[in-house]
Image 1 (cartoon, protein in one colour):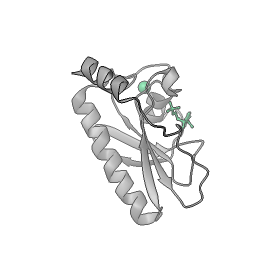
Image 2 (cartoon, protein in one colour):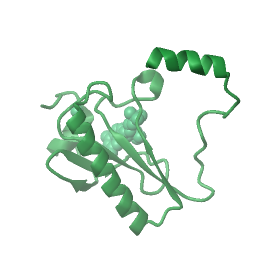
Image 3 (cartoon, helix red, strand yellow):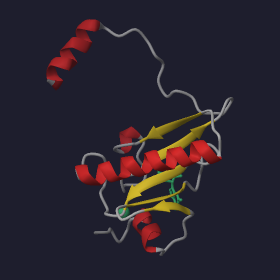
Image 4 (tube, helix red, strand yellow):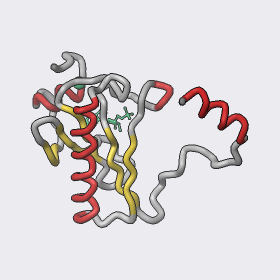
Length: 135
Ligand code: 5GP
Ligand code: ZN
């Protein structure tokens, strides 16, 4: 299942070029065209799914396993100081390409990335209230 207008489906089909670095039956991994750091890559399911809420659990599992495999290779070959996995879901959650993907971002000492929130003291009552909504 692919989406005719989807740029990542086109990379899978070979309709547009991509620097593919890993693939298996269910997933493809390729370099991000605008890397946040050296080695920034994306892992996607072959089967089109819009986002975290839409992807089938078994497909998500395959993508997570592929992301771990790629993170291991990045760790070995690029020797970063750390690695972030990132998924964005929905426009407000920074998603810009609507084919589910996990960013694998090698981290280096002194790289330009910063935590996107300011850690601050939480209100225990509010936390408990939300927890209640989630149980
Ligand atoms: P999002 O913002 O949805 O979490 O991530 C989309 C990512 O896809 C961005 O980091 C962006 O640089 C990358 N991207 C967008 N278009 C292309 C493309 O045509 N080729 C590749 N390789 N990456 C792309
Ligand atoms: Zn797609």
